[in-house]
Length: 123
Length: 123
Image (tube, rainbow over all chains, first blue to last red; front, side, top):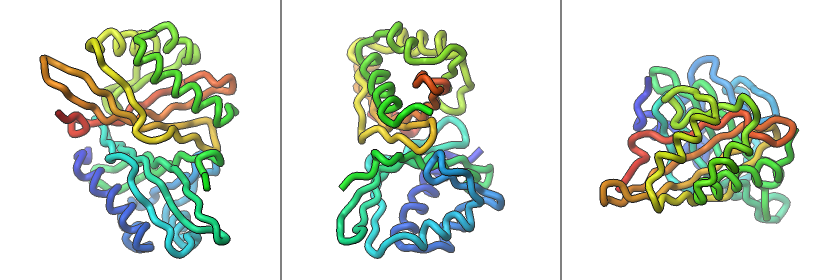
């Protein structure tokens, strides 16, 4: 089972890599066959193409900031609440999101689920 | 599928009922056969006995406060990060927790998973 520190470090690295648009770093955090569902309810996708699309679709200047410290667990999952801030069509918006991740024994992410709905996107 | 508002309202009601030690209210938020895993990694339990135990074990004065607004989703799940503050053996502690809940079509909770590890408990 991955340690709490391993999971927390990987999730912080994921946010940092999103802020740096570092797709290779993001993909390296995931296990072979890892999946993403972003947002929950939109369907589960293979992590590699899913994350490449996600990062490619980010507007310049989009930032990802933790709202409260990352939570670990007594198992192989962890979770974090964060806010994405960006400017779309000249208007600032924020998306309040929350990612839940599962990890394998090597500390690689096997599953990511992002919780946010239309009502979590505000101006 | 439950609406975003339905899920968010139920989760706020759950926190409010925890603050009021209102076990009947908490149980009424759950569907028949609902389950809880609190914390993740400690095993899945039937909601009714699991929550009765949880509330019964709370020390006087324990409080539950959202750290950031509740997140909904495009599906039938929602999530929230909150902090539990209590005094145990004369010492103040806080547990940073994060609950992920699944809902049925009537807006009742079918599954609750609480993410926190030993390292999320601080003085």
